[in-house]
Image 1 (cartoon, rainbow, N blue to C red):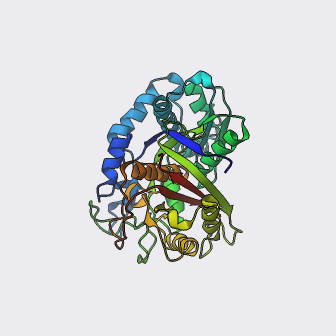
Image 2 (image 1 turned 90 degrees about the vertical axis):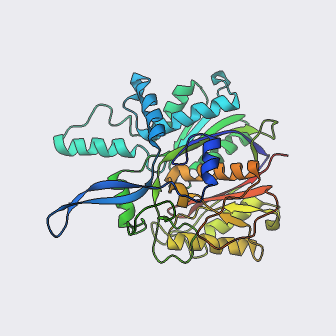
Image 3 (image 1 turned 60 degrees about the vertical axis):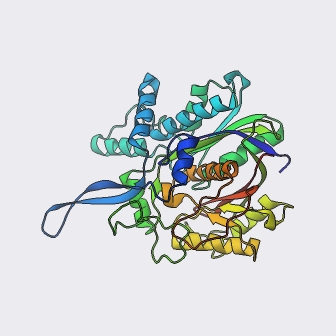
Length: 401
């Protein structure tokens, strides 16, 4: 990395809430925030209707209302997908907290793994039934739709970038923002990820891959449907969640920074399969080493892992960490057991967890795994994300002195 980059603001919306105080309070609880979602009714052997349901990390009713209020606040927003509305909502908060003005022409980079999932499925179903497509079906489902609407809403004229790099999308947004700042082409960038994947078809895709948690017991606060970071699980337990997160990046170490980005790393594995990651996650080993740079692995206090709750995904990342950190493993944690896997938004929601831990000087443990020694203080935290095909990103966050 050419120079330090400051994170001067962060905003998110997820199953954990929509403000730092609420999110941190929910992180301190041992409860998860996954709920049961009914997909559809099926006939059982006795020809009676039964509800098929799965676990999901869904926005609260209060936050769903906030998104609907945003949708209804402007006639142009009525036909936008939730991914766009999530992004607009968090971006407004982040810009306000960073004290940025629209005429400063900062850059915008929002990514999403799935994009306008709900709208795309709706328009496709409409076409199958009528053989006609709605006028707005194309512009409201393109990937560039997210950043363009965020830039429109914030009235900035800086560069707009959109991309999709599966589950490491949000951290690739961060990489892009840093690259633009380091190039001298922009001093400020707002970067984020947004995902609204809680549709029947998207969930069915994950079930077809046999990675989704099965509905095998009654749901309550002490049963954990997603066993992310549990290396003793015998089945895959990934659960999908929805939400968005965004951060404001500024050049150098500024006074009002909430955290400092002191290293980034990235790597891609040679594909053996469409969803493959090697047993020792070579991509993670490379990305973590790159993010560390000349910093000793012994200086890292904690790692917020990608850990999606799948047997192979969790184990391979642990193996990679063991290879890089050898005998001194940092404190390990993840948030997917609590709010679900938000695909393209997940990396920045992990950044949020890391920043909150740095600010409060307290680690957030996964309650159902073996006890770990807690660091005396938190100064450096590594954040990991990886997507299908082994697209890994690691970000080193440092507490502002």
